[in-house]
Length: 252
Image 1 (tube, rainbow, N blue to C red):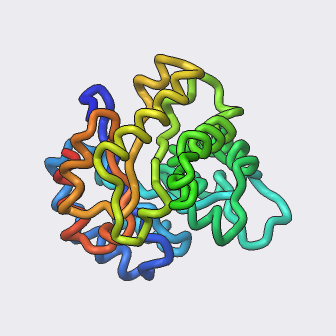
Image 2: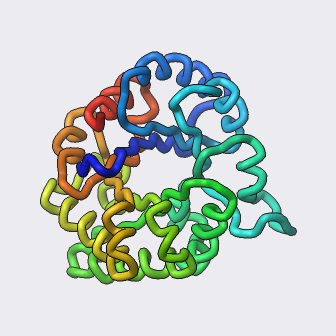
C-alpha cells in the first residue's frame, strides 16, 4: 500500500442480514475501530441502510449501498436512486459488481451513467471490474479490464477520477475460496491504475484500487502489502465481526 492513499476496507454483505442483525453487527464492530487508521465501510442491503446509519452515526464506519439506478427519479420499479441514498445519509455505493452483471444484466454502458451520477450526488462509487476464468485462460484479462475501466469512467471528468474507488475482483475468485496469487493481483491492480493514468497521471497517483475475491484474515496481510493495492472489498469474511475486524487490522 502507498501511504499517500488511505486504505479502504469495505465489507460487501450481499443479500445477508436483517435490520436487527445489522445493528447488532455494528455495535460489536464499532469498538474495534477506535484506533484504526484505515477507512472502513459496510455495503449493506437497502432494507438495513437506515438502521445502520442510525446505529453508526458519529462513528468512523461508513455505510454504502450495493447498487443504485443512474436516473434521479422515474418509472423504474424496484430501483433506488442516488438522491434517495443521500437523503438517508449513505456514504457510497457499489456499482458493477460481477453478480449484478451476471444475474441482472448490468452493462458497461449503464455504469458509464451510474459512476458520474453517484459522484454528482456526493456518493463515493466503488466500481467493480474483473475477468472470468475463461477470459484469464485466454489471455484476455487486460482487454476485459481496459473495456470495463475506460467505459465506466468515460463521463467522469479528469479532476474527479481520483474520487472513484476501483475494486479489482477476478470473477473466478469471488466466493470460490480461490484467490489471485500476489503477483497476479499486483499485476492486474497496477494495470487498472495505468488505465486511469492514460487519462491523468495525477489521478492515477491518487485513485484507490482495492482487491476483492475470497479475501480472508489469513491472506489479507500479503495482499494488502502489495504496492498498488489500497484496501479490500471483502465478501463472505465480512459477515462475521471477528474475521472482518482482522482484515481491517491488516490494512491499518
